Image (tube, rainbow, N blue to C red; front, side):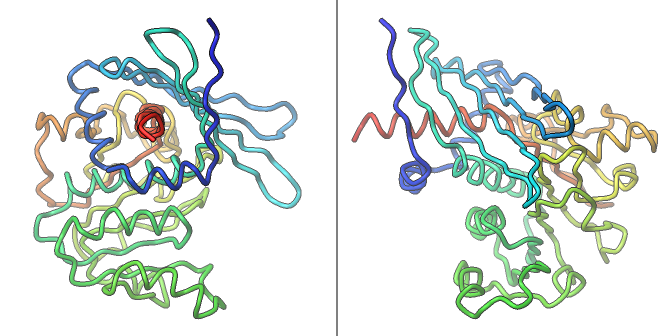
Length: 317
């Protein structure tokens, strides 16, 4: 018998996500990947004709949970600015029937930030005390929420050029995230003495040159789904210890890695490790004799794991 999936709106997903331990859900999926209990294919990028945009399909299989899924996210070029949406379809591996069709906007924000948090916890020096956040949108705010308790931060600095001219009420959305958070008036001020820098922008080009940092630092990057988008100069990869979410797929999609390979001789084989390696302790923490770079591209498994968590929670209501 064919079944109709439950359709979950953005508001419903936001409400249920508040009851999910998102970082712990992602830690489990990366451990499942390391143990061969999950499958993460490469992203599938399909371009629209005549430069009208593209869409990316993110796939994933969670065998232990007996589900698989796909998130599809279009990038639609418009005169008034690009439009990006995302929907995740969760399927049963037992019945072959659809379980859930979920507006993935909230899932994307949560899994992006929580993946960075898992990486920060696995990679940042235990004595890290100063955190810098570059960006101020929903993804940046989620990053702060998931990372603020991971170390004994003595200071959290946030900078975004888009904050100029914002009202006190709008700025309060950021300063209310944590009493230690302060708005910096320049990129340089935000980066001063930072042990960890989280790049949380939608920029398609570099926003930070690691060579300007005064000491070895953990830099995390998410970027956007614009073609070959990157937040650090591609040539900087050769001077850093590079980690990523999943080494089998990230180098083939991350903009700075693609450009670095084509133009600067960087090789994907130089990736030190990924989150499955780190969480299964196959790879040790870096020693910070130079900068450490972590790149996340967004994995289908992350969306599938969160969609499954929301579906299970909905079934209990």
